[in-house]
Length: 91
Image (cartoon, rainbow, N blue to C red):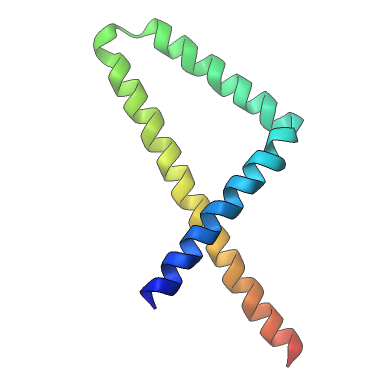
């Protein structure tokens, strides 16, 4: 069962990277939001004293990892829901 979970995790990761690279990268809304986020980060970076810069980087890293975790869980749950729905509809 552990091997199946690892294979699923690898599939989810590859699929999410594909979606990010192909669909999100072409989305004007995504590009605008990314630009805004980068500008806000730069403003915070430039305003903070040097001793807080690493904390800002750590915060950014942790929020990115947290969001990635949420996306993976949601994607995996969507796959499970799709399989269950397919079973219900085929009965």
